[in-house]
Image (tube, rainbow, N blue to C red; front, side, top):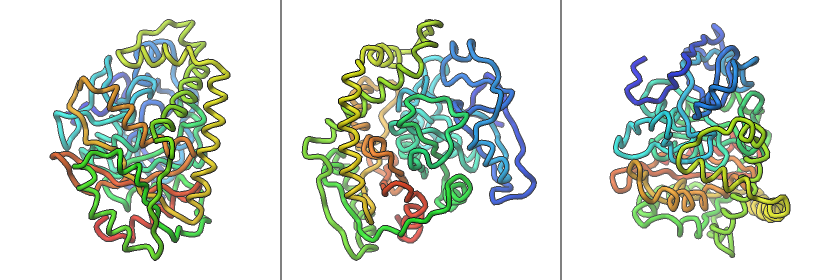
Length: 386
């Protein structure tokens, strides 16, 4: 494979043919390097993890399901260290090249998967999404991305980051392929299609003017497809406060999940990841419990709001920053203030490439109640030019 975009891992070549027949026969896919493949090693973006972990004893459940459905696994893809970033810039392994805007970041942490799809190297690719790791790179690379309802797709064989947030997701260049994969990985939909459209004013208020202007005509098309629409404010205290609650619970879970390996191995981490993990180690159980209680209040509000409704928000509040931007941490906070909505409430979110702003790709997102993943895909499919 001509990997001119540096999307694929180089520590181990993986090529596994799928079943001769099935709903995905003839399609090629890639998997983020936190999905285990039997007999192969994962590095999760960190050379010390690679050094201290042997070949996987079994293949991740999602990968097995895709192989059984006829798809061919073409390789494992680069990612941010430990999946604990959304930039797509890896200190040790470099930054995959954004095919749409080579001078800008591809987004992460599922960077290589998004790039491989956007570049046409595979038909679709698996990623994981904890705090936006499918949704953000899909937006920056101008492709479709689906973060599934938490727990809807088995996470067996997925190396965790923060288990109560981690979800399986995937990318495709077209909605039809995204839906073909969904019908393999997701349980059959039993939910009634949402009849009401909710527009989050505060979510759009976070977006830059250029992004709001690019999204406006597509929001109007969405409105035209619903008999009932309403504009709401999601958070009276501000979405930054929601981001703070998410950050505390996520950080606590990251440290609880990887504490033993970190303390025993003393791995080297790159800039940003090093500081984030050091901070995570300081979060007390009491602080995490308080943030978890706030999380449940937020989730209950969103469950009630989305009963029979679909929520529309910008996918990311700004366009892809240039590589090695000095504002990386500020941008991360702004993005997660928007991306945290689905993560906190364990909801599915579909991001759709709808246009450009400042010469870069922008995306519009649909969020639904839990287990409405397939309904979101149906809504997008029936909305012309969305």
